[in-house]
Amino acid sequence: MRVKPQAEKASCVNDFLDLARVRQGMRSDRELAEALQVGSPSVSGWRSGKIHPSPLTCMKLAQLAELPLGLVLGTICEANAPDEEEAAVWRKLAEESLAPRAGSRC
Image 1 (cartoon, rainbow, N blue to C red):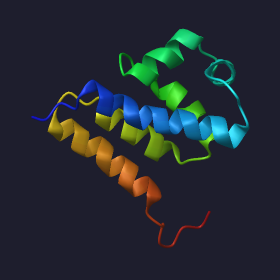
Image 2: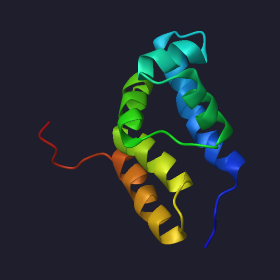
Image 3: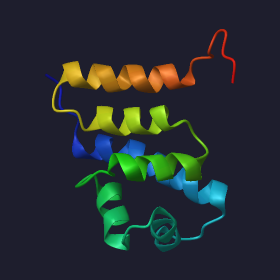
Image 4: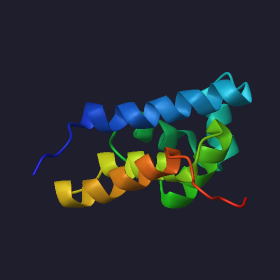
């Protein structure tokens, strides 16, 4: 079982937070927190790796970052998975969200 260090867990969340801020033209984490409908302490906690966003917040973050939900949710949940077996499930979700869909009718 490989448990990711806190710094590594925070890194993926920080990348998504930074991308959301850039893509939405936000100048601060406070603006980002407002857009995500959370308090500034939540964003600070995510950045430090002490806590991680809920699935609902991952959905909002994916929208702001203009990324597939599966990528954001899968990446964040993989980083926080309790064991490698669960991490593999989340990793697969993230990878599949980026794969082109053959025969997609959407």
